[in-house]
Amino acid sequence: SSFIWDLLAAFPYATLILSAGGKDSFETWWQLPKLLHVRVLYRYYIKQLADVRADTLTGGLRRLFPFIIAISHVMACIWWFLGRLKEQRWSEGSGDEDPSWISHYEGLGTDNIASKGSLAEQYLLSFYYITVTLSANGLVGRMLPQNIWEIFFVCVLMVITLTLYAFVLGEISNLVMKQ
Image (cartoon, rainbow, N blue to C red; front, side):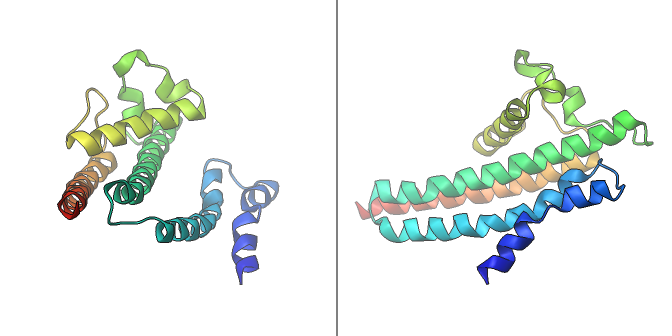
């Protein structure tokens, strides 16, 4: 049964679409099946959780940290995707009048990273925004949502932030009380 999932995840959808004459503007959508490999990471994480004593403070933090990083990573990818999708449509002149946060970003002395930096720099910028928003429970500097989809995502992010903050605080309080 694992072979089927691996085959679906590794199949070169994008290559086939492009070789058949498809447009490359949404080529990255065809890489989404690679997310099926996340189940392997999940199994590894569950196995590691079984080895960690959850009743100690360090054990509890070792269980919480990967969870927070995973949520931050997914949110950073969504934030970047929303910016790139709107930015691509705006630069092509498709009628969208609202540019994304990428074209409005001016902060940190890294003006060109948002639009012209390497993929790692762009990811780091997006991850920075998400982690600061998650930790500060508010909007960050000049990197603000610029269109309705980004505003909606930031509202959802705020709800996730409040929930995550309450969960982490409760877990740490519970661990300290057990000591």
